[in-house]
Image 1 (tube, helix red, strand yellow):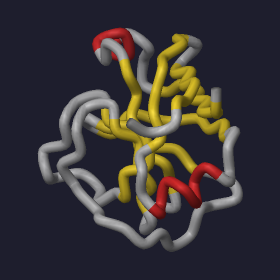
Image 2: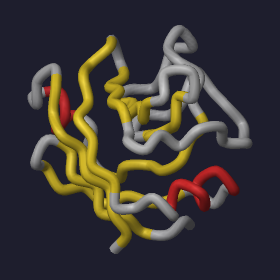
Image 3: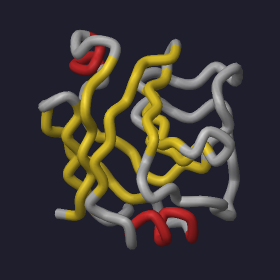
Image 4: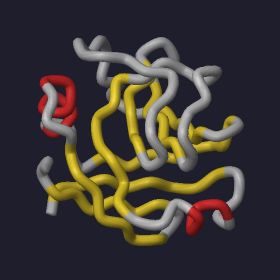
Length: 118
């Protein structure tokens, strides 16, 4: 199991875990992070400043629900409230939200996200 995280999505507190990958270890050095996301189909994405740049690691366009990953081409963090269907951006998974993803559905099309170590 990865290192525990505090993840606040649209004012709703969730637990989370940092994945045990080299890309996630680099992301850890940037914590805490704060960013605003907008909905784009099943995923939400938002710019991160400074951007993470190129991250080595496996990329996927079908991440599990609750995955937060780095979308290199868009220089954005992407959050997946539902399992990706392969038609979204290819992301390098960094961490996972733990909890009921249904809470996010009512938050609207844009909201703030905060990720930090516990």
